[in-house]
Length: 315
Image (cartoon, rainbow, N blue to C red; front, side):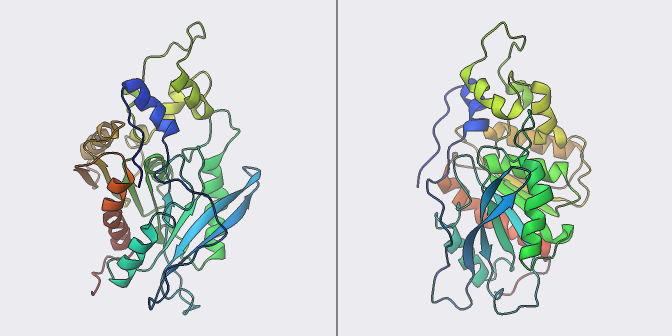
């Protein structure tokens, strides 16, 4: 397993919000199946969906729960799980994460639901400031309808959740707070949350050279960097006014997070607490690494499972 690159300054923290490296390296494959010999067993498959909005195909992987293939009449909930920047749709299939999910299914620690991960590239799962990459539109208008029509999914808010890690945690919180009518739960690990006040001071009048890290952020938030657009998309800003009634919220972060995302997580906790919005928040020992994510993934998957089915499981 590989840890993230270390951040050494506030400026580097700003860069990491966009250029966060992968939790795990790897290349895409056509399809992957789950472990053999387990009865019943889930499986994983990787496919491609065509996008008119993005004007290119998008790879995705789906973890399919035990019993899906045997019972052709049953419909299932779905969790859209978003990867970190530099990773891809195979974030669980390559990492040992599938074995973890399989164990949770077999032990009845979580109920049966699909876990679907699209390839989000470097998009942070939002629409770019220049309108050239409308990834949020793709997710809401094309990808989710495609998945929910091609798999036996109960396509309603009560049976739909979104989650993610790092960049994907930002994307999950953004999507849930921007579209709370679509999701019953949101979960995030080490979400890439940077309060606007912690961004480096910028001279946006063009007379002062923009730092290289902020220039990279221009791919999403404008070139020159558009602080107002950054704030409009920030989960921290959205959380202050979004109608979050009925949305189940879980997020955690490592106290030693290499990028200081624990500061953003605490800020989100304070915002939700001030609004008296129920949520579950944890600061745990640990840094920004796959090991941290793997240690706490079961908790978020169980949180989602309890949202879909509040009844306790029999082990």
